[in-house]
Amino acid sequence: MRQLRCALIGIGLLLGATPSMAFTGNHLLKMYEEDSDLISLGFGMGYVAAIKTTWSYVGLFETCLDAKDVSNQKANEVVLKYLQDNPEDRHETASALIMEALIQAFGRASPPSDGVCK
Image (tube, rainbow, N blue to C red; front, side):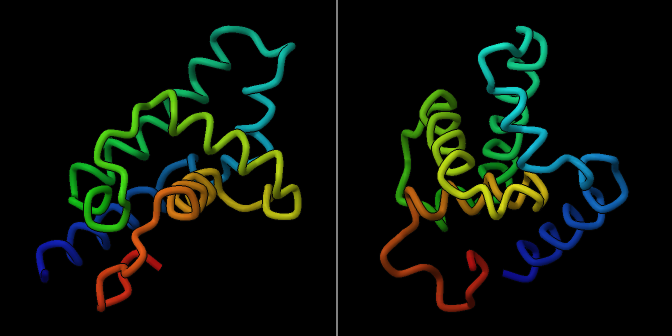
């Protein structure tokens, strides 16, 4: 468990040092819009896949979500719906909104007792 916490802290510090922290839900939603070019759409979908993959790498995806076989396509559909349904949250960082959308859609009925998924 200590290794997991250290990994999460490391990831948080790494993300905090990059410009991606300024990437909000508004930016991500704009990439999904119909008039968006394919490069923007691909970047948005890739961003969601990268967050999902990072969660899998540190073991959070399987620990926090009841979503063993969720495809990147399904994850993107869930995130898009969340962004459309929650305009008041779109100023938040995209990575946090992606995690929130996936937890709401696929969260376990009883998450780990240490609350790491909350």
